[in-house]
Length: 450
Image (cartoon, rainbow, N blue to C red; front, side):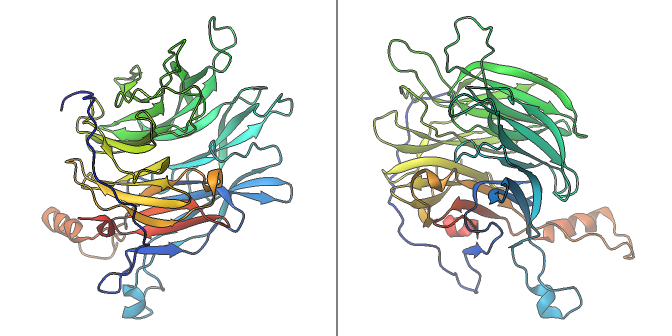
């Protein structure tokens, strides 16, 4: 696969104007899910474990401030076992019990740098939220706290905090990936005050590594200058984490170049940032529009927003060698993109991408590594402007039923046949902010092309 070819593969794109509709057989291609976030909720995040168990977090206002809450997407049969064949056969996605991660009166609540959640297995989770320094001077002055759970979000333990002494800058824009049984989390932080020549608004890219039992294994700087306020993204490929960010290359006296860049952990060390594609977007200021990333096996996909050619575009690029290099990007949007991309990679290494388009459209499109594209489809209407937030997608799959301890043992060949016969019903869950609060839907990939 040639590295960093500069040409852009252009694909005709029409703005889809219809919501999904039911398909033959009575199964919906998209199903809106009631709850769990109430009216007025926002600052949402989706995550799914490698097995396909998904969790949604969001922020609610409380009497004393704000709370970060979470719910798991339940995917098993509806109705208790033994209540009849019809109850046992019906399978439906629905949000489970709402649980609280944290609550506080001193939070920094923001549409772009929002709290987030990560799922490293169906039981092991991590989450973070932003806390404002009471001595902050100006609009920012905040850091974040991080907590972990080992019981599907029922209970939480704080494991890390940083940036709580920031007075003018901030530490945030956190994303997560598994790492050697525990996890790594990248985030943006201000340059150290003693660093010579650093611009007043310089932001660094740092990475925190956390043990499976929740203790800190180290916190180090990956890069000394990245874009100030764009969300970050992480993925897990070939046994190692990678991070994707909007970089910032100083280009004085002209505007800085702010393209999407990748860094991978290899043999215990993080590689220098290098471009996913050299868009050459020169912009004097942060566009507040970060990348989205996904991986499966050795395949990596990255989607992002750019205005390098003068007009707004959403692009995606694939790598077949773990992110060592990428094919030329494809354009996905219909000409009025606003970005805020989200991405979920499926088992066949195709991806589902969502982005904001035009005034208030939440768009979706399926893309394959060989360049095939499904038709763009309008999923929903978002809240106006920044109230829409940063879109979220996650892969969902049913889990095989637990083994019956009283059943006779089966040989290895039969066990493999049973595993192959199980249908995980792979699908995607999407989250966005609508007119009144956080909304969600489950989408079957077949609705976006085969």
